[in-house]
Length: 84
Image (cartoon, rainbow, N blue to C red; front, side, top):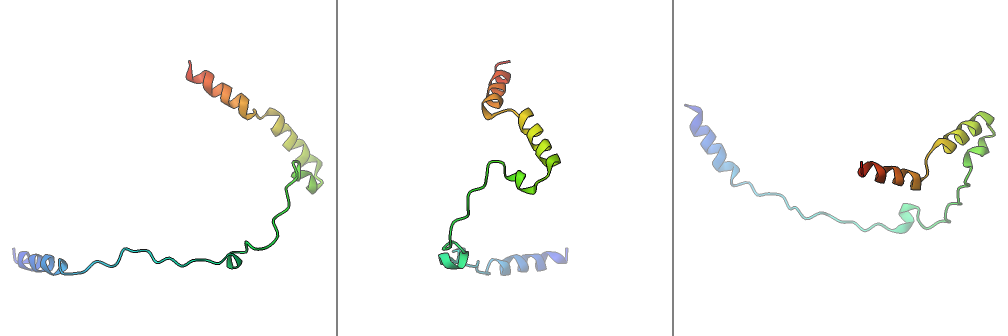
C-alpha cells in the first residue's frame, strides 16, 4: 500500500506531459535525385531466357509454359468451382 501515493503522483505528472506534434514532415524530392530524368529502359523480349544460350533452361521454360494454364482457363476453372 505504500506504492499507491507514488503511483498516483506518477499518474498526475504524466498527465502534464505534452504530446509531440503529429504533423508529418514532408520534403519534396526532385526527379533528378531519383534517377527519373534519364532514358527509359529498353523493352524486354518475350523469350528473354534464350539470351543465356542454355538449352536445358529453354526446355524447362517451354515445358513450364506449355503446362501452365492461361488466365482465361484459370478464370473458367475458378468460376466452375464456385458453382459446385
